[in-house]
Length: 209
Image (cartoon, rainbow, N blue to C red; front, side, top):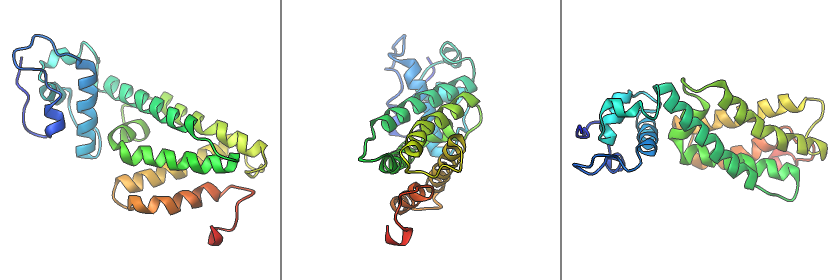
């Protein structure tokens, strides 16, 4: 097998390679996903080739295609796994009221984005990901928005679908500002409080928040 190259590869990437002389990689599929995610973090986006991923994981280029037919397929899987993980986080959020739950969800969403930047960039921004993942992200916002509207915590003169889109857009914008160093992650707390109250019918004035 070809040896892993040292370029564009940190300690965590080197740990993905198979043992020297081993015929098979122990878990090549997940190693490919991990390597692609790491390079996405390092380069601020999925600016890599499958040949690079093969070199990092210590296998021949052809071995990658046994698991992923293309770079787009690899990115799609990273996005799918990321969406599943984020959905699990969101579903765990409970609060005393539907309005407070929206704020908890907003905190969880942004925490995911800044703590797992490679996955988030792929699942919510970068090319190669299908509209299926975009729809999945929107769908996970719709249910809590609908619950808050039904409870009278959100204004009802805007449709549930539109509020979910606007809320997601605000969270995504904050996430990307933080990932691109245009905003400090320590500033996200105040932003979360503001964003979660913009559409609330029962929120106190922002100046008193």
